[in-house]
Structure formats: C-alpha cells, structure tokens
Image (cartoon, rainbow, N blue to C red; front, side):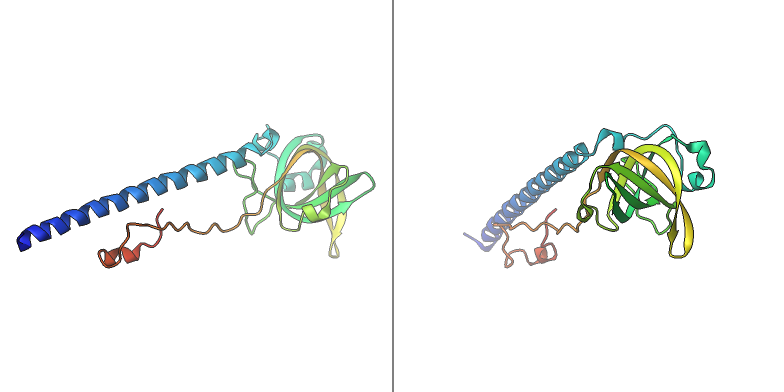
Length: 199
C-alpha cells in the first residue's frame, strides 16, 4: 500500500470519527432540550390558574394609596418581594414590596417598586416558609388601607384579602452540562480542546 493510500485511509477513518462525534453531540443536545422543556412545563403547571390569569382591572398599589375608596373591593393581582410576616390569632399578614408582573404573574425584579401592601391570608402560615425577599404573587380583593410606620414615617398600606397566592421558587444557577465523548481523542483532534462542553 502506497503512502497516498495510507493517507486516504486515515482521512476516511478521521471523517467517520468526526461524523460520530457530531451525531453524539446532536443527540445529547436534543435530549438536553427535551429535559429542560419537560421541567419548564411541569413548573408552569403547578402555578395556580388564578395566579396565571390576569384580572380585568390594572390597578397599581400607589393608586390605591392615593384614592382608596375608589378601588375598595376591586379584584387585583399583585406581587413582589416579601418584607415581613406577621402572625395574628387567626390570620397572617404578609408585607410585600410591590413589583410589576410578567405574563405568568411572576414579579419582575427591579430596583423601582410600586409601593408596599399587605396581603391578608386566613389561618397560620409558618414565617420560615415565607422568607424575606422571596417573591410572591397574590390574587384577591382590596379590603381597605391601614397606616403603619416605616421607620418614623407613617406609611399607607393597601390591604388585600387574599383568595389565592403563589410563592415563587428561588432561582439557582444551573451548572452547564458536561458530556463525556468516548470517541474523542486529543491526539487526533487537538482543535476540539476548545469545546469541552456540548450543548
């Protein structure tokens, strides 16, 4: 066998190996997308329908603070970050820093809030399950406004009688997946070193 024949044979083996590697990466990518899509679908299905469905009115917290009587008994879907939890004899009050919501009803993190409000929920809620800064969305009726001090400042809180609520899970950074490629040979394909992760 001549040198040219050996070179062509080696090139053919290299080409087949590269094709296998490419097919493996594509299969792993499809599996990864399928798993992520399934998880996202499962998460969305656990959100109560009342939370995912926008209410007819688009009332802001600061509007109620200024003219509370106009909005009394109006139905709202509000959310934001938990400031504090207060347990009373037969109900729980959650103080919330209001934020805008996305289409699914999830609060959008922002440095600018829409004010504070109190969510009034029947029964006892364990404060440890509602930690500070955790995002929450509630649906209910505007009951009234009350004044409580924030520091030394008398603050007006709209109070919502809650029908439904959802505590949004904390988001954690998802590590990038690493897949071992049994066909990878750094001696044959050193340029593949630039791609240790397959997506």
